[in-house]
Picture 1: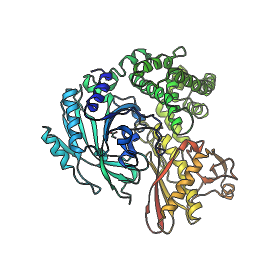
Picture 2: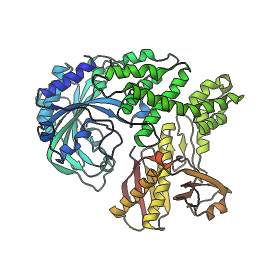
Picture 3: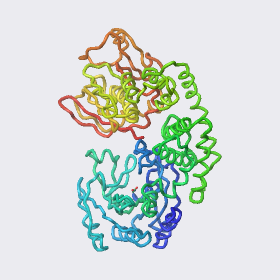
Picture 4: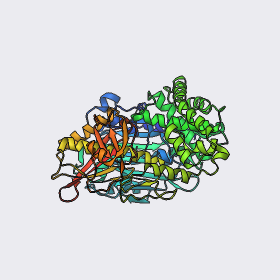
Length: 584
Ligand code: GLY
């Protein structure tokens, strides 16, 4: 079945069962707590909570849609067989019209009768966090002849909330086999029985906030079109479906399969983001777009000067999707591409000029080119040719880590593809992508410490910190629990500093001089003769925050994006612990 037919059949199936067909909303959501639309239910959040009336707006309590969605959580996995940033989500929704029985019957009917696919097994919620095991769904599945019903936990089969709060609830998921015999999660059927007044991170970390029962339980389902097409078309990966396969003919054979998949994913995502009004920038969703565009520019560059890769595939993408998404606008897409490419090529070209001057290119030189001109390792290696013969990725990463090294006592470093790229005892990153995230969280941690001192006073001193790609954990001296309005005030200060997009810089000074700047440092620690003082602000004197530190830090606070404090708790006498996460 062609993907266009799947979209049509899906909407017809639900329209003939009393659902109003609703157009996909924009990738720019009207919910300010999320940067991009990540699920079909997002445009319907207010109907679950009875803030809006579905009957009035759609003439029905039930709706169905094919929703444009963009998730950044898997962006570094793109290139394998199954991960994507942009995807289409088929979904049916009910805001008090029907519940478990009909939702499961519809899903079963669509998969087995319309798609003619056997269901391998289904999952149900096993019960936790005060929510009971979903025996009702089990017996509905059994009554439909599906006997392999597996129980899973809150990580897998409990949806939401999206953003900073929202509807959520247990799910039941349908698994089918693909052409390679792998079991693939095809459809996620959510029973929105609850409202959670916090984020998903808070819910999972067992925050004090409690699940509240919604007055009218609702249904929210999500089925990725790409995966369904892969199974329906009997092909081994999503990239072999009609949604992608003809794009690959355009790709240069000088790049490998992984690169081809990244190009296909990112080019498609860029076309949709630009058409929905996102523009490249250093902030928020603009930063996401810039990141994928720049990656494409590097690939294009690697493929050869004459290769106008994006210009040849963007029209194919627009042609393929225009019927379903008439908002796709080729001229705007190409214009934004050209602008970003011209901008990026300036530094890329300067870096390349510098590269051409070097008689040999070792790790140190490659790192300098990266640091000063943003020249990625791959380009240096490739363009460097024979002069870069001795350059290896492991060596480059070593050099990278060496420069990011924090000179604190006890810092532990492990290198190489299998070890950690950076482990200072405070920051941990296993690859360049994680390093980018922990770098943002590291600057966040400096801002957090200063924000805590502004709100709670100078009793606050750092007692420890631990930063992973998921979150920063900051321990500090303070004698009591923080009040909710204090936490909010700290969070507001951090986000204000982020919004101001202040520069982050450092000065290397003799240690006594550094101490006289008023920068924060650990009293107990031994420092070398010269130390770096990192400061957030236009100058050291006017800085919002200054600390002894070895880096790494972002260049501008805007790169951090919105920050949320997800937990505040005791971690010993007179010591508190805060966990904060990046929302994008
Ligand atoms: N909201 C359900 C899903 O996206 O899977």
